[in-house]
Length: 402
Ligand SMILES: [Zn+2]
Image (cartoon, rainbow, N blue to C red; front, top):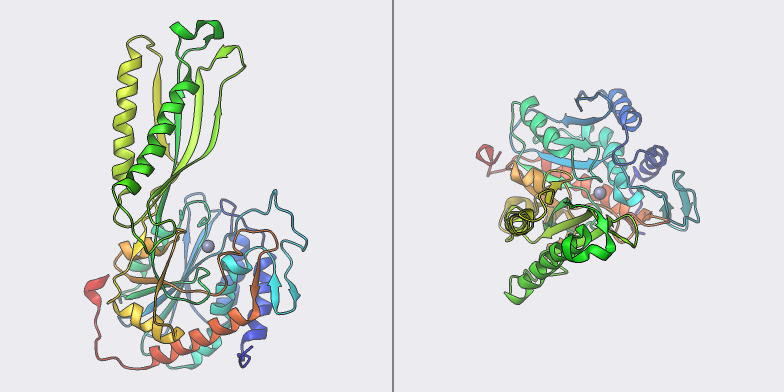
């Protein structure tokens, strides 16, 4: 490992505390958010809470430095994914250190980044920042980036100045990532009328109808490839449609009156999830029109499981790309196939990239771990960011951006 950063032990201690909060996406996160705001209070940083309607979840944001335009938001989420059904050989919610690795759910995705940010608070305070640095920590990211939009809206309301940049600390092995796919989850329900299975000729199976719908979706994905609608920056290089779950029917000898399937779209930036969904709806309407005349109860209904999470496609000539490339000493920004809150920040006018410690290969897996060297690299990155924020810059006033 290169020289140990002075805050590395503190970072590991904070990470240990954070991992112990087994807050999954969907759970109340007041415990871990409470820990973070206590820590900010101890360090005399004033903060804002963004509560959900029920009052059992909160995002937290704060500013370190002056109320001046052009600052940088460091964004992360407090929730993690479940460990259920996974074979862990180490405790899931207790940090275990072994040979340069720190094991535990969320170490990589993405409490390692949160721990680095928090550990750096005293350092950030000490440096006389000219540009502010903000923390924006959300909940329910893992179940559809649900808290991002409210958090971003609240930041725009809370600060008179306009932050220009957002760095999303998702695990990228500290590489600059400028593009990612968007995502949406849907549930489609087909309703028909039950009948004895000998009556297949004068009844309509919801399962059979479902196969047509699934075929349509899979063909749609093939069409993208056949039409050359690809973006070689991504792997896979096209928009994907995937059927993840299906449930229907009652018994072998009953024509199914009901079938439900869950599916997702992950789009490359030039494709629109809305448009794909619209054309699917047109096909469904055709099926309904065809079948309803004979089977009046027949229906197909598609609902979104959460609002569409926009993808990210930050132009390489934006200032944030040069800035983060400079701070990470890297030249070639990459792309990732997973979705995050990055697209939500970008949509709200922030110049946005992803850059964070750890490798997403370990995210969501059994025995998730992060290398201590990754945390170390992140701390140096934040140090350099703070040094950048100490300097006066020529090209100020990015107000029009946000
Ligand atoms: Zn994440």
